Length: 233
Image 1 (spheres, rainbow, N blue to C red):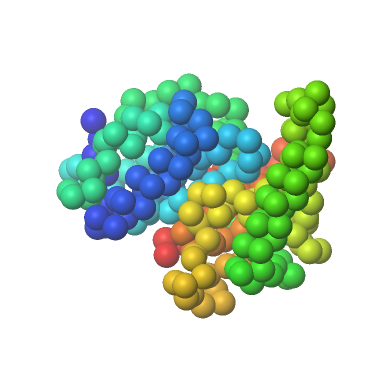
Image 2: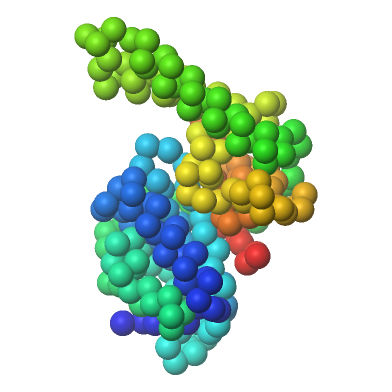
């Protein structure tokens, strides 16, 4: 099994936490791994959010024998989590699996432009909290006979498809960032560069302190296949 040597035990713990959160939403989740040099990008699609989550991981060296080759494989998130050794700061790459459709449609490598209008982190957290409260209130107000899965899904789609201010970023992208632990807690500080919004072709990318959320805008073509360029932070 190919072994990835992570930069330190903190990187291993963060990777394990990300995989655990993905598996919370889908026990059969898969992730796509792309690595070159000492940077590893882990792509996942948390069930029900309709977004692409990306976690950047720093590597101490590319592989077990330090081979100067790239890695691109879709694997089981559960098997990858089981292989993470936080004390040794390593992770084994499981056997490849047949990837889900999203794994073949990744955001572009470059061409990202900053987008204005993104509220600060505390404003985004407040937005998600208000949306969660509204969803609970509206669903609880439904008569029992009308509280069907279809009715609940319709309310959820209406709320989570709203955009953040004038940015075009759907609220569900911010909800995903918070649910996956990408947003820095209010007590942890952080500078203005910790949170930013970018666009490239059909894609929007919310960069948060501990990962990115990418979403493809509705009605756009199938441009922008390839790998998402990441700078490891």
